[in-house]
Length: 425
Image (cartoon, rainbow, N blue to C red; front, top):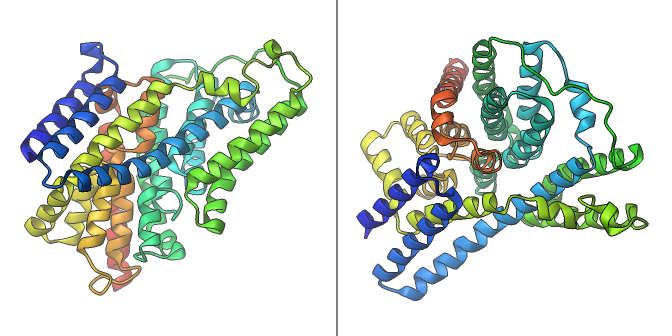
């Protein structure tokens, strides 16, 4: 069964990679792969009821991510429909190439720590679509956005799912994770930013400023932008106060914006309302991207439930033993598999008695699992979202961005270990 499951996953994975060659949408491949993996798993299972219950648990967890993504995309789309992001675009437009690249990278880095890497990636994608004219340059900058978003999420307890898991599990505390991993995460972002700045030789061609004829008033644009962005910032606060999953906060915010926009445009005809309400924004969302996201996570869930990912983590631990190498390996594995089950496996393998709260291993693991996924576009939620929405090719990312991300990842690891060495002196 294990061999068959891995074979199905690898064939599906390769089909997604070669999407441009085989001319089949990756969302269809991801869905088929997910269903086949679970079909094999349930047919070989000793207890089908237990397996189906496991599927229900995974479906619940994945649905949280999907509904969170749906809400975030709808809110971003609504702000965009009101030309809200034009406020940011007009303020960051600059003819200085280096300045523009650093603004994009640093903004993504810090925004990801406050929101999360997935939401930040979607927001920055919308901004870059209105800012950069050249497609190849925009894609390279989006690669940098993925790296910066994952790096920014790694040093914040609410910036990435894995850091949140470690926080809830008692392995880390908020202030300590910030103190111990901020510099490493910053270097993980800064080194790739320097490289991208060197790679882009020519002047970045920006979308020319025009006398825009907006379909909304300045008050409407500013109101939706401020409230929409405020809602996104409110989601982690809502989670901290109530303890409810982030998607609940996102759904609350979506509902509030829905009411607000309906009230703003209630005097207009349905034709004029167009995309200016949540109903219109939902029609514009790329559903195929959400289904692709769903299929990928469900496929990996089958590998998780079958014990394959735990076996990978256990084998890595038994073969290597060195905590630094284990964390490094988990970081690289998270570029292929979802980092959530990998971190969950290590949480169960290493007890708090052996490695107490705020032990440097947990912080190193948070950094590695959070940033290692940038090495492949399919290795993180931010990457999968941008790949699906912007239709960035897997091999294009592999050739242009993966090595840059790997250099940043290794540089951050080196900084983290150097910090620990100096503190131990």
